[in-house]
Image 1 (cartoon, rainbow over the protein chains, first blue to last red):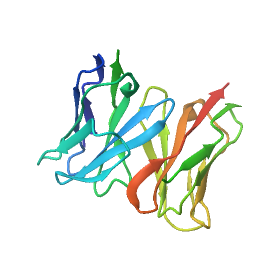
Image 2 (spheres, one colour; image 1 turned 30 degrees about the vertical axis):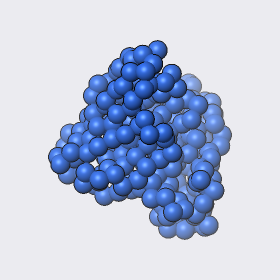
Image 3 (cartoon, chains in turn blue, cyan; image 1 turned 120 degrees about the vertical axis):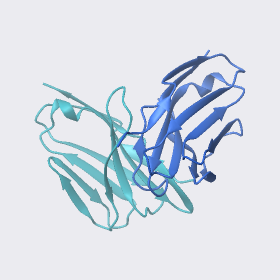
Amino acid sequence: KAGVTQTPRYLIKTRGQQVTLSCSPISGHRSVSWYQQTPGQGLQFLFEYFSETQRNKGNFPGRFSGRQFSNSRSEMNVSTLELGDSALYLCASSPRTSYNEQFFGPGTRLTVL
Amino acid sequence: GQQVMQIPQYQHVQEGEDFTTYCNSSTTLSNIQWYKQRPGGHPVFLIQLVKSGEVKKQKRLTFQFGEAKKNSSLHITATQTTDVGTYFCAGPGGTASKLTFGTGTRLQVTL
């Protein structure tokens, strides 16, 4: 089975811009979660989608949003980028829920200048 | 909210030495998971423990889940350079049905 894929792998944006990141889960996995990883804050949960519905949300501002399509692919969007949004954004899929075994993608490294 | 702390933050060992990382949650966990992230890589699932007091082994790795289901440990016997990376524990807790990751322990192994 192919693993979780994320595009793009690297992205450079400037403050105030918006960005959309994409994630394709492992075939058959219906749960897709997004995490932000930074050296200072570690791995933080953003949100989880299951069958096109947001099931859980972390403590991030409304500038962070996401969606899931009928084929389980997911996108996350960050609007009005800030310098502090520079991070590795990881997508993880699971056959069942966001609190069972997570299969992570390689991540998208976002740099905000 | 739920907090999951790990100690130590960093450990440097010589190849062949043992290594242990400890994980402590502020809330009771329904399960505890362990992940390994190699430098420049992404977290990879290692194992999940569910029962109070559970102990599981994977070759040189031994995982324990505390009796109160609030703490866990990962012990590596006779470390190898391939063990280099950051080890994270993670667990769902409280009313939140999401995974909270620990702060991580970075392991460096030298010859």
